[in-house]
Image 1 (spheres, rainbow, N blue to C red):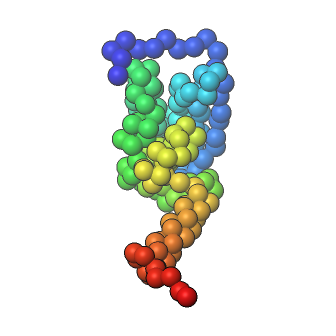
Image 2: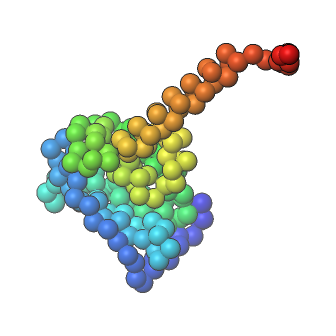
Image 3: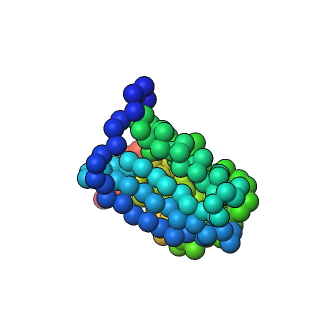
Length: 160
């Protein structure tokens, strides 16, 4: 990580997502550089001054501090995954159907939007469709391995 924070760009592209976790509603706002790199995150949740709003502020300030100092998004995501506290449970996001907390939801959503597939497989952060495809692929590979184990090894005698 760089000891000097990177300057914020003058202009950015962004995306706002409305989300719900365990009945709590909020907004995840991401800003990106022209090349699609994540530059800033905001999490808005609960009423101003509430515990939940304060937690959301602390979360996005921490993420942004890491981003400004050059921390890779995958490392930020890995640090936040699986944090567990209420509210938790079902979400309104079909790509992240459940989350163990607001922090876990934000980490999973950032991973899906900004972390390459191979890294997400390592972190076990996949959409339901990706998980189904990966499971099918692994099952097919296991079937191929089993079939290969049953094939005779060595030279097969020639038949006359």
